[in-house]
Image (cartoon, rainbow, N blue to C red; front, top):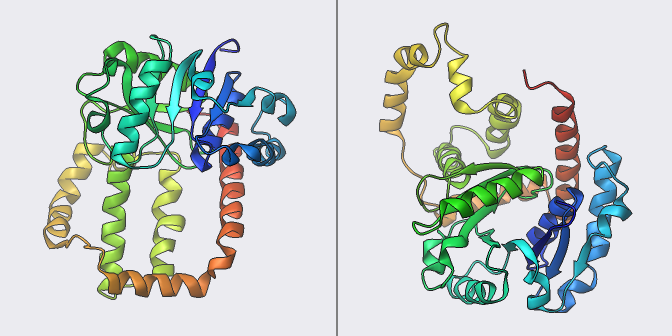
Length: 312
């Protein structure tokens, strides 16, 4: 892949993170933003992240070597003109996505895969009008993708199997963990699972079963410890003597009762404000950036540990 180029459109938080993902894997990266000022300090910010990764042993080359593969491109045509994959990271607005994908289809080589980082919009909602729509899909990352490797490949009904296969190949060679949706659904996979968890914890919070801090502990010191290396299917498969079917036979009825009594959280303003006030006592707004940096360093330590452990 060292001779292949990836075009990154949008030099914000996610665009810069994708630049790290591809550059550390040997790709040449062309990074573009329609706002020229967004490109001014992007290499400085990316360099800081690369030095953090080096500290935890998460890159195989010096930060400067990786950084040299990333070139800011003031022109969209220059950024995507030689790309094997274009990763779009513009505003989460339908009309903006529709416009940029028409441009990408016009400017990128015919063989290039055109992928969007959108968190919620299905590819069919902004690529139907594109002449080369068969190569368009969603490649939804988890923030930050250079620390959380999952990427969801969500094709439109008209996306070709060849484009999906090529996207999987490129993401895998970039060190990511691609999963493919078999059909479109709003929010894809990760956001829907996250939505279910958030709905339940907010409902439990609203009904006064626990405060936000203790509900956070249920995940970080409970479920998330197992889920950091096993998914839910494997978890229940190992939690009954005869596996998943045995678990369902033992506990399925109880889960049905819980589901029947569950009330989806409607994100009412009063509960959100109450939870926000509790969080602000724990973390003042002016400290969010510092805490986010702490989060990233904890993720680096966890990723370094996971890489050091055998898969079986």
